[in-house]
Length: 478
Ligand SMILES: Cc1cc2nc3c(=O)[nH]c(=O)nc-3n(C[C@H](O)[C@H](O)[C@H](O)COP(=O)(O)OP(=O)(O)OC[C@H]3O[C@@H](n4cnc5c(N)ncnc54)[C@H](O)[C@@H]3O)c2cc1C
Image: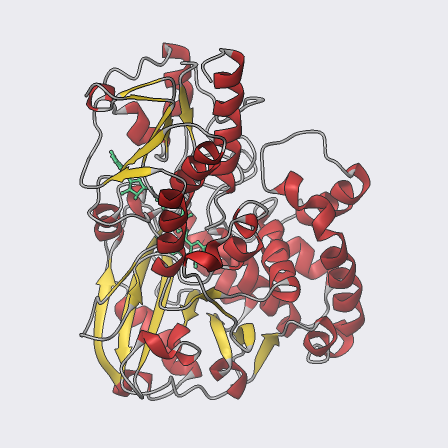
């Protein structure tokens, strides 16, 4: 290959494409190499069950993409992206057939919480108000914050475990359970330090922006990103699995939308032995077992709030969710799992044939565990929606191994590119002032294995691109 590029990106997940867009916008010549036949990484939609039913293979609900300080400034709507906002961002089911909804409106949400209402309003009114002052610092590497006071106030609330946070702030089991449902997105035991942070950020997102998703499926976001990137002159080459740096064209910099284990396996990448040893210590988190259903009709929820929500969190007591998540981390499969369910087709008629529906759900499993959790997940749904199984037309399941086959970044089923505990939250993949740079000045990491970690927001890619741009600028290559 004789072409010369300023930056070559391997991997076309949302972070890889964001990296490429940032650099291409700066006037650099970039190209993306992707092993799959379609771009998007874990942000792709396909007919997995029956003709006409469109399922998100990976991510389904995109509050972080909508709220992303980088993505929200791109003209993606001009490239076909249309956001859909479910009436209720998310709902937590209760064991008595009741439910607690997270409405956009904080007071309406608090009205369901009895004696915890005042505490909920106090917490989330101030957090939601201060979000714009802290989002940039939270969604990136550790630096001195722009607003240290607001950052510290958030940090003090986010640093404890979800269990401590819930017990300290709320009295009623249903309020604690409601918070656990959001915090369990962390894929961490709810007794772990900083597991509260995930519940807080996701609740803030729900109140401030809603939990929207692209019309037609997650691919709607990928297609808009790729269309915009190409309009800037960017290039993408599909079906190109990179295992040796020599496969790539000559370039002044190389950015990898891959996790440490994959980067270590690439030949001729020339990383120092010390840096390699540090990457080898990188930890992966729990895996997921995932199901997509084609349904005859909407899910027969006992509670109407569930029907009106884009996402439903299923787990019937704090004790149950706590056990489900701690078992996984002790390498034990749990047959009464915490389940995350999305029902995009209720709000997006393009997702299924007229009158029919789709649903998407997963539960956490130990990393690499290939057990089939279909029965466990469907049992949990049946309790909140009796008759659910009767409306199933078809289902498609993914074990951790199948997910990794679909996207090699999903190591052992870990959807976040590595464990997101306190030791790796801001210091991924290694503790370093610039975690995107490696020991080789031309090589950068831009995947969710860098801060701020998992989720569709493109912020890892944005920060990695800035780091590479500084290097290229300094070395007068541009
Ligand atoms: C089942 C599931 C559900 C999820 N749900 C949500 C959700 O609802 N909301 C949310 O915000 N996030 C969700 N996520 C997480 C989110 O999708 C990821 O955090 C995000 O996609 C990470 O982006 P990335 O660009 O870092 O990597 P990825 O999206 O993983 O992209 C990496 C890319 O690199 C390519 N690649 C790998 N190896 C090579 C190679 N050797 N050569 C060339 N290309 C290569 C892959 O094919 C892939 O395209 C979910 C993920 C999964 C899997």
